[in-house]
Amino acid sequence: MNEIPQDPNQTPGQKKRRVEMTVRPTGPILPPSNIQGNALMVVISIMAFLACLTLGGVSMVRATAAGWQSEISREITIQIKPEEGLDMGAALVKARDLALTFVGTRDGQIMDDGATARLLEPWLGTGLNLEDLPVPRLIVITIDETNPPDFDAMRALLNEEVPQAFLDDHRTWVDRLVQMARTTVLIGSGILILVFTAMVLTVVFATRGALSGNRHIIEVLHFVGAEGSFVAQEFQKHFLKISLKGAATGGFLAAAFFGLASSWQSRSLATPQSDQATALFGTFTIGWGGYLGIFATMIVIALLTTITARLTVMRTIYEIDLIRSDPARTDGLLDD
Image 1 (cartoon, rainbow, N blue to C red):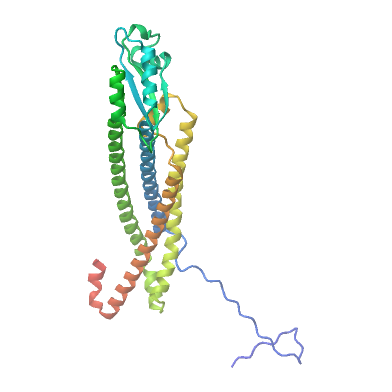
Image 2 (image 1 turned 120 degrees about the vertical axis):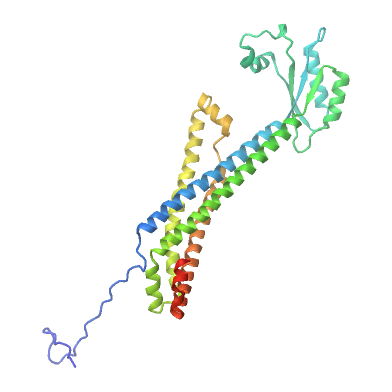
C-alpha cells in the first residue's frame, strides 16, 4: 500500500494532510452547435417568418375590411336629381331636415358646389360650372350604427315630399364588402393553414434529421444506464434553445417588416406609391393583436420542435431496446 508523501514544510509532529481532489467541470452532453443544429435553426427561422408574415397579412386585411365596413355603414346618402324649375337649395334643405326627424340619425351635411366639383374632377376635369350640368346634388346623413333609422319609412317620406330625392342606405355595398372581407379572410386563413402545415412537416423532418446525426449519443447514454426520461430531457433542452433562437429570428424579421412598412406608409402619405399600396393592401398596421399573434406563433413553433425532439428520442430508445432483445429486428427498424 502506497503511503501519502510527506510534505517538506510539515513538522514531524503534525498529522499528514490529504491532498484535496478537484473535479473537472462537466461539459454539455450534446454539442452546443453543429451542422445539423444550424441547419435546423435556419429552417425554423424561414418557416417562422413565412407563418408570421401570413398571420400579419390576414390580420391586416381583416382590420382594413372592418374599417371600410364601419365607414360605409355609418353614413347614408340622399341624392337629388336636378329638374327644370326645381329650387335645388330649398330641396336640399328640406330633404336634410326630413331625414333628421327620424330616430337614429345624428347629423346631416349638404355637399357644396366645391365638394361636388372635386368628386367629378377625375372624370370631367377642373373648372366645372355645376349650373350648366345636370349633376345630382348629395346630402350625407350620419347615423347611429347601433340604432339605425327606419330606411323604408324615410325613403317613402322623401319620395312623397321631395320626389326628386333618392335614398341610398349603402346596404348593397355593405353586403358586398362583407362578402369580400369574409372571402379574403377565408382565403388568407387557408393560406395560413397551408403555411402552418408545411412548417409542421418541415420542422418535424428537420428535427428528426438533426437527431439522426446524434443517434450515437443516445445509444451511448442508454448503454451506460441513463434513463429514457433523462436523455429525452437533455435533448429537449438542446432543441428548445435552437427552436427559440430560430423562431425568435423569424418572428422578429416579420414584425420588423410590418413596422418598417407602416413607418414608410405614414411618411409617404398622398404620394402615388403610397396611394397604390393603400388601395391594394390597405394600411400596413397590424395592431397589438397581430404582434401578439406573431409571438404566439413563435411559442407554438418552439413547443412543436421540443415535442418532436422528445418523441423522436423516446422512439430511438425504444428501437435500441428492441434491437437488444431481438437483433433480427435491426434491418426492419433501420429501414423505418
